[in-house]
Length: 276
Ligand SMILES: [Zn+2]
Image 1 (tube, rainbow, N blue to C red):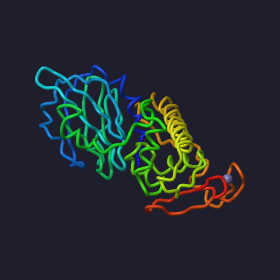
Image 2: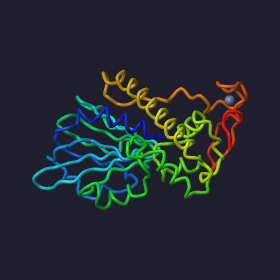
Image 3: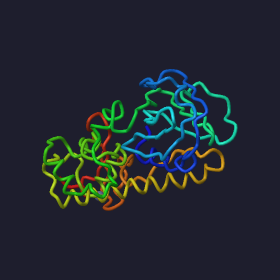
């Protein structure tokens, strides 16, 4: 499933190339999670602005004489975006949305079709507003501090791992990144949120930022390798220190890594290094 770093790498890879391009046509394949919300024709000739990201959504501003607003993109469970600068290859059976522009053909490939592309007159009005409303803070937002994280934790009684996965306090910690950040911060994933001290929230926020920026950097390097072909982001993952290492010695202390199941997801932890 594309996580925040993958979406951010996609944004980085596309933003410069699409800025200022004009929409020539739009092709819609099989239905995605939500309908586009406007007639595809009305997007013709609109100019693409600066791509931004909120959580795992990408916002593509579009402006023109006839209308302005933008498209909110989500990659769902299995989506990927690719910009074909020259002639695009024929559409495959999983290519469900295509935006042809003066900068090339931007194609959403999404086998499971949980992804979405929808029109909104602005990012802060319906339907975009409703979709973005429940999102927690952006992990790299300097206004989001350990104090905010601590305050969010104080209000919750679930485990810290569940709170990270839920994304209501802070977005971006998918399963792998949550496990890794908690390992680096030395926090047991089963610890109840409200019991986290401010000092531990400081360590956790730093660890989360480290893990996510490593993933973005790794994806960025993958992107450079792929750029020659089509600019699409390849598969990438951080060098996991705890995730997927059940039974193997902890890289810090040698204790075998344990796997437990929380909210139907695997959690990996070192029972020695990660304290309750
Ligand atoms: Zn350990």
